[in-house]
Image 1 (tube, rainbow, N blue to C red):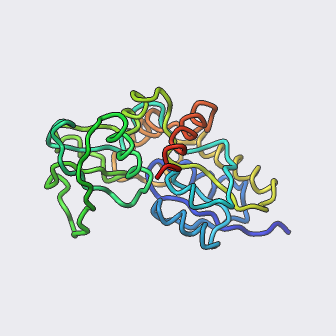
Image 2: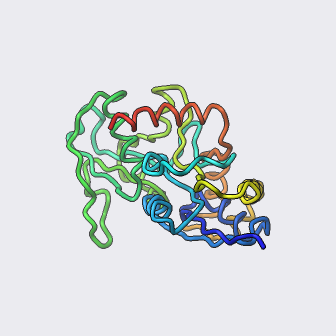
Image 3: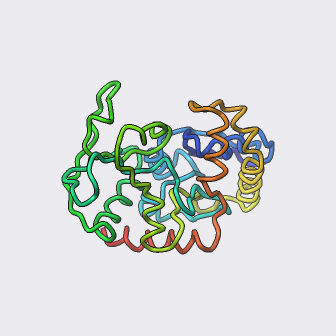
Length: 249
């Protein structure tokens, strides 16, 4: 009998095709999904509570016993739309940036861009965890995920971090990759890839099954046009470039 495995994943809009494939393709029947924020996925794997997971690349260096196993990722070859710096001032006038600590990757990416591309040195502050916080109260704030939809109308300056990365180094950006604990059977890795492929091939159906917080047509357009799922050679180069930076921290 095939051994059951726990899979850590994220419940953002951009992972809906993955979740759909894992839960409903029938190609990975012995898997149990653990849905968490990006930073907590790394924690689940590190603590041994999950054997496979979609991990933000900012947390990869915390998982020396894991390896990238999938042909799929959460990536962008241009504007990603859901990871951005929102500001009331142009870059050269920004003095403080509040950070969305749900994602270590976005925090480190905006620090990289500030140092190597924008050439600014702002003060970094956490977002206050207030109920119903109005993000427009901030002068400059980095936000990720579903909460970003509609925010572009509240700030005069919006800097899409994946687009800024591409402009700086000419490479796609990878936000998250699938990793596995050492010793996971190749059959399970093959089944994972097959399930992910099936989900990516059924984006429209996945949105119907997991109704998003935004209009379905906008969600489908976002998944097809802003998120790039194949983990190809160019994305591997982009990931390697970012990992070199992370190792200097």
